[in-house]
Picture 1 (cartoon, rainbow, N blue to C red):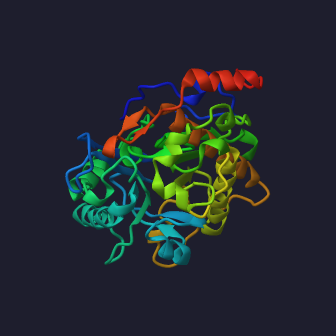
Picture 2: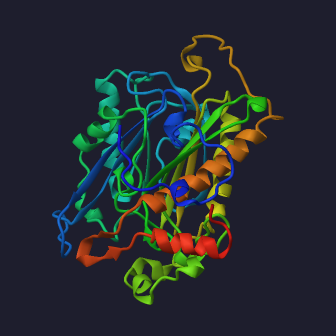
Length: 372
C-alpha cells in the first residue's frame, strides 16, 4: 500500500509504553484497509477556487472493500467544535456500516455524498438508505478550504485504493494540510499487541491531528514545546488562534480499531480512553478544538445480518482494562508519529508551517534522559 519515506517516532529513539504489532499501524487489526487521496497544487496568494491546494481524503474500511458486513462501534466527543456524521445511528443501533472517511471541514458534505454513491454502486449498503461516517479537521491556514477542491472522484480513489499493509503518515490524505502543537502534522497511526493472558488481541489507532499549541506539547513526558518555543510571528500569522484563550483553534479525529470481541457500550468506553492518549501529548482540548473519537471491533462477524437472534461474544469487563491501556498507548504514539513524519509545508499566501526538527526533538529528550 502506501510507503513510509521518513523515520517514525521509534526510529528516533523515542520511548513508548507497550508492544506494537507487526506494522505498528491500524492495519495490524486483520481485515482493515486504508486508502488516501492527497491533493497538493499551486503556490502563492490565495485565489478561492484556484488554490493553493493542500488537502485530501483518508478512508478506513473496517472489513475491507469487498465486505458489507457491519461492525459494532461506539463514539465519543471530548470537545464538539467539529463534525463526525453518522454518529446518531451508531449511538442508537450500535453498528457502523461502511467506511470511515476523514477530510477537511468544508468537504464533509461532498465526501459524505460520494461515500453513499460508492457504497450504492458497489452494493455495500445494508439499509435502503446510508448514514456514512465522515469526520473533519480544518486545514484553512495552508489550504484553500473555501475552494472545495475535494471532489467525488477523490473519495472514490481513496476507497478503491484502500489496502492492508503499511500506512503512510504526515502530509497525506485528509491530514495533508494539518498542523499540531505549532508544527506541521497530519496523519499518524500505531498499534498495540495485548498480552496473551488477556486474549492476545490487537488495538490499532489512526489519527488526523490538527490540534494543540506549541507550549502544550509533551513527548514521552518531556515538555518539548517549552524546549522548542514557537516564534512569536508563527502564532501572530494565524488570526483564528487569537479568538481562543489558549490559541488552540484546531481539532483531532481518532479512530480506534480492535479485534477484541467488544459490544457497543464497551466500545464507547474505548473511545473515551483515546482522550487519555491525547492528554499524554499535552492537549487540554480547548474550546476551539473538535476532538471526536470512534472505536469499532472487527469481531462478531455477521451479527448485524442475523434475522432473529444473534449469538455474540463479549470480552469480560474484568479484562477490558488491557484494551483501555493499549488504546491510550497507541493513541499517544500515533499522534507523535504524525508529528515526526510530517514535512515543512508552505500554503496559501505563503503561510509556512515548519516540521519539528528531529535533531532538536532528540536533544530535548536527551536533556531529560528520555532518549533510548
